[in-house]
Length: 287
Image (cartoon, rainbow, N blue to C red; front, side, top):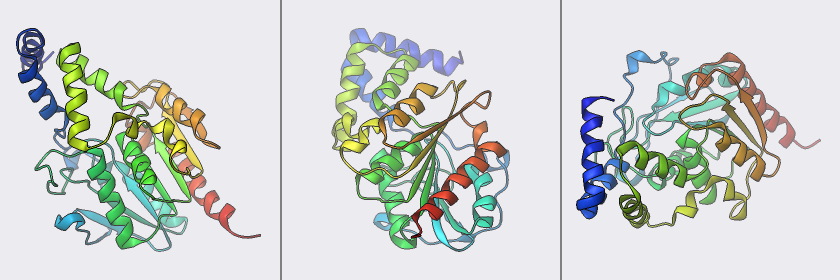
């Protein structure tokens, strides 16, 4: 454990017992804080693309487009950036799609959004996706990674209607994320209860609104491919399984040994996703 993390754990252990209100305020701030971005030079270079202008609520986003045809949108996860999904660009363009990707508010090269630098929420990220779609056309497909899956699901709940959806290592249950976060900072049940209440208050929605397997109760879900690695240590494979089991017609592909992020660079995963997206386009055409 790093010295910084050790100090955080000691504080929350003390705060749980002696100052739960103070500890809850700090935990809430940490919950909404975006991790520092992965340096661009540590990620594969993107193919040359065209910068596109998108300004949801008057705040610009870093966004790029490649190719022509029906749009496919790429959505990164919490703390992610466009470059992580760059391996999908060339195969999708070769398959006849226009590919559009963006850094969410406070992520990558995009400035902070309504909540300031390095702070955002799932609804704000979903608003960003919906704003990009409003500018550049209804999606044929959305490919989303990790927490980006929850963002895409929330956008579907808000009216987004892609023909196909690919979820890569998606997180299914926000309360699981909460439990892991609380354990990671060394807090206990009093801080957890306060944090749960404060998060719901800030986003203005109950936690159940972000439970991904429940989405079909509120909105029609498109044909969906879920890809999850059996050894994913960040978001366990039970999350992908829960979504695939709950969503009508969803298909689950489990890999082994790719973990949470390497599956984004795996040629077999990329090929499976591109084929799924292309097949959805073919299936939509009238006979």
